[in-house]
Image 1 (tube, rainbow over the protein chains, first blue to last red):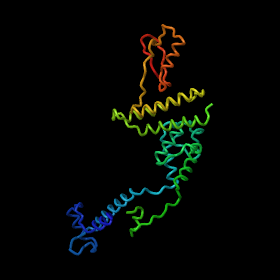
Image 2: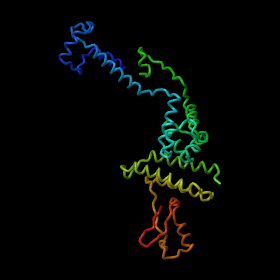
Image 3: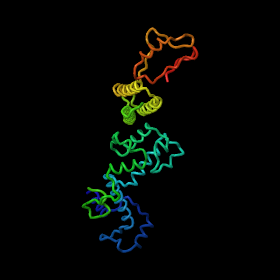
Image 4: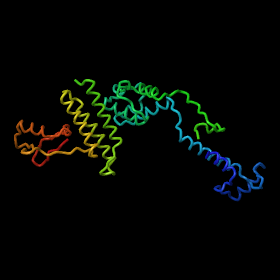
Length: 175
Length: 134
């Protein structure tokens, strides 16, 4: 609702923030005659369209803050790798070489206490509790990613959302 | 022999402490929240690693009790630091000038509370140095 008001409002009101210098005003007269509105004012079409685009982008960004983008498996994988890299017990040499096949205990030399710490960090990141019975399954990075995908029901293609907005740019969020 | 039950108890205790270190709020000195969180995290890490090789079942049980006691005390008094205790009555501090008999060691072990179990008293090496607790 707010975005429709903004969208229509910025087209009707004059652009008061834009200060046009005198030579620029003279040059605008040379633009296409479609710039001239009914009341004779020269409406600098190029400035208006840029400001509209900026406002539309702001509205779109604000709307996207309400619903986060849907998760993809690659997204989960990158977050898991980032958390593993941030863990301070891992040696510097191994830091950026963590792949899906690295085993926490065999390859990185961590012990079960470090494993618990990593899982607690993952719980904080993804926001849900991992029960103790599942710790045995989570000894490699690949297993962790698969477990998270299964738990969060992440599919490859994000579901298409139904919205009432006629503009396909605003289909990412709902009112 | 660490069977799976004690192992899972230890790991649950560790997990509880790590989560405590993330959500700890210092009540007495609010400016020291970060410092106390760091203290909790480092204490759990160092003490758990120091006692990692304990094999005796009774000792293990007592160490688990120690961890749980410290967690409960910290949550109740809102103070993560352990309350240190003095020597028991009618006993002298260890020094290199004096022979300590076995009974004296036993009395001292019995008098120390459970939550200070992992802490050691270093013997004095000279008269000028004070005994330090690690």
